[in-house]
Image 1 (cartoon, rainbow, N blue to C red):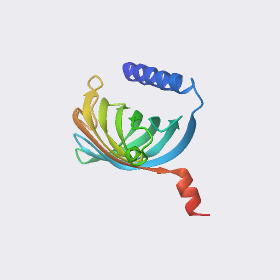
Image 2 (cartoon, helix red, strand yellow; image 1 turned 90 degrees about the vertical axis):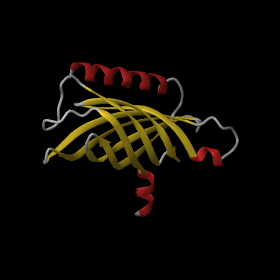
Image 3 (cartoon, helix red, strand yellow; image 1 turned 60 degrees about the vertical axis):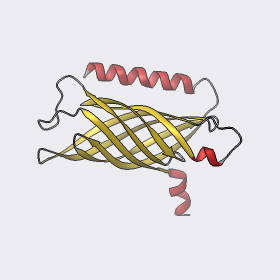
Image 4 (tube, rainbow, N blue to C red; image 1 turned 180 degrees about the vertical axis):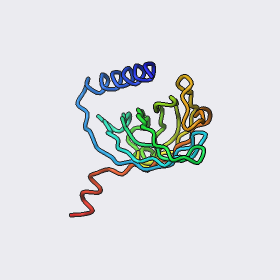
Length: 163
């Protein structure tokens, strides 16, 4: 557990340090999705998106993974950090997709991931999860293939819908 906290603190300091060097704008998002991590989980949470221009975008998020392991309902907290990359210049259409590199961690596993995102709203990522010690969820160790499908909804969009 201490290694997990130390890794997440180091990751947070790295991203906040790189974000604080320049004037970045921040956008809030709500995310919902599906996570396969040796079990199927639903995901609900929030993210903060930091950008200076649209070539490199940083995202930090926290969410809850909800699912069943060995016929028992379980909820796990999840923290994640992503970097979205697209270096095509002066062509708006090519900025519709970004390559995504990131990591996510729960109290049971840490998973580096890569993938693609459409407008930063619809993510499809994959990676490999490494268990933290002998951590188990209802008797099942969460390691191996990690697949995420996530919908990120900007809160500005939700606010504008109800005007």
